[in-house]
Amino acid sequence: MKKLIWTSLGVFGLAGLAGLAAWFSLDIETQGLLASMPTNRDVLFWSQPQRDAAFRALDRLPILAKSRVVAAASTPSALPLGAPLKLELDIDAYMAMQRSAALIVLQDGKLRMERYGLGFDAAGRWTSFSVAKSFTSTLLGAAIKDGYIKSMDEMVSAYVPELKGSAYEQVSIRQLLTMTSGVKWNEDYADPNSDVAKFNNHKPADGSDALLSYMRQLPREVAPGTRWHYSTGETNLVGILINRATKKSLASYLSEKVWVPAGMQQPATWILSKTGQEISGCCIQAAARDYARFGQFILNGAMSNGHSILPEGWLQEATSTRIGIGKPERGYGYQWWTNSDGSFAARGIFGQGIFIDPQRKLVIVSNANWAGGARDATATASRDDFYRAVQKALDAEAGLSAQ
Image (cartoon, rainbow, N blue to C red; front, top):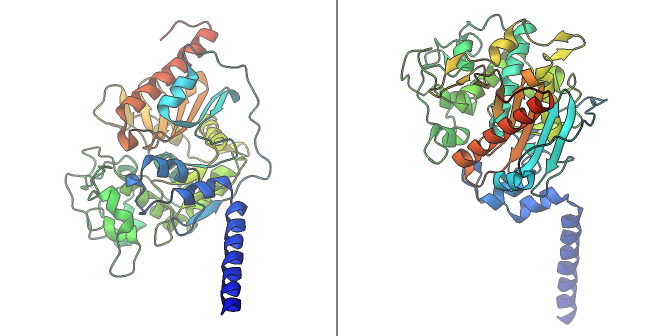
């Protein structure tokens, strides 16, 4: 009996040592995620510590989320250092207020500022949330340029026939991109019964794509083209449309059209739905510098080998106001938020952002985990103030009066 007990203790001891060794073999991001493991799969309702851990490691554990790799370029594009940007504000205080993981200011292609927080650094990947919408829009434009899609005014159902007979049957690609479908949708992030909270957990009875099954059951609310209404579900439909038209995964098409031509330094990942489709309204994981490279890529006209990946004039349409959103001097383009001064932005719900100002050749990248969560009005206003402070500083450098 004593021999059996000691043998059992030895086995448990070895198992414990093996587990300890396995733990220390993990990178620090995965360790942090396991230590703060969410108790449910719905990120909208995770605690702040859970989000802190998960946003830098969302693609590390397949049990939490499966993803597809976006291959990077063999030779990354340079981001040369520029002169330090002089701002009339306390950057440390600003980053603390924003709960900022990364803050990059790129001007005229040069790094004017690069700061990190929350234990994050240049080597890590941070999840994008709805910043991914602007990547998806860019892929739609590329699919038109490549001849996979004929026109923005074609019906979505021509490429996704499962939508025939639904409220989306007579919705055009243009209306889908501008979120003017007129289909009813609830994007309330605080409501567990909202569409945005429920769609990814939907289980189709017929085994079809989960998103399509959910979206085709939604009712019409107003006529197509008559109202702007923010809907992540519709960007996810755009992703399915691109996949059907190109017969390529979004991750591989993003690598081909953006990640390699833009000279990204690191591979990215794109989180998949339960039925294996990239969630195109969300969830690209990338390094902060590569988000900045994407901003520069767009600023430079989305050029690859001397030619734009987008149709002539399409980028100007995409990044200028196509529809009003009920706020002065603000609008919406093709999955880009637009401003009356010609600047535009990609935005994610917890403080992720890519702000682009063509007039000043400016790109600002923000990664964060806002304390107030998905709709933090204070953090949003503070970030807008930061954008204006950078613009003011650049104008001062150029000898221009404040605008």
